Image (tube, rainbow, N blue to C red):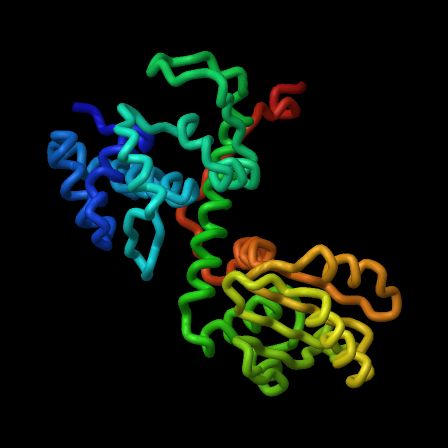
Length: 305
């Protein structure tokens, strides 16, 4: 038996956790390996990066099920079926794949964000189809999807870590981006607020020629609205500051973003949860390089006289 694809894992995984119990990856890996009749060699077969193929595909199956709202993650490293997942199993589907799950708007939004395009009108026949994309295009899409999943995982971590660690992460990011001087200097001027946030004033450059007021709120679902931004701008005025950065792990309302765009006197940069994780990836905060790939081309000059 060959190692199943992540789509082939979806339905067996959902059925296995159908009792509503909270499971972890290892338990599901062991049980599903038995169901698929995998040998020890197949279970331990690895990608070039060193990650086990079956375990990696199990994670991708879980990712798609989670983004379709069929499973949820009540705790770190744990997941369970949702009511939507239970309702789907009552339909007794014969097969689950990405096209089938596009009935859920949450998955459509996830695919849109990760720049993945699927033809929802073409049924999955199980046969190979011709891919019109070049290898370079396919690699680019794969990179974007991996980065999207990493960003979601980072956002989840930000919501789980102790508040002191969240403060440290924000400061590390700003310092890696070239602001605040050293962490010791930046930490001296930051303080916790009563609503899961921090604020402070950091140097815009190493010499301290200009200063930036920073506010960061670790909110899970509540979007930051215009009143919060107005209070922030008022604080900037009170400090005699002209520039500010407002960071949140959630999002900003349209009214908040419109207010910032129209305010010409004070420059305020808004960073929502997804943008925050993008910056963390770009500036190597909380992430490490797993694998490097080199894309090479012909060096035409080498072959010239």
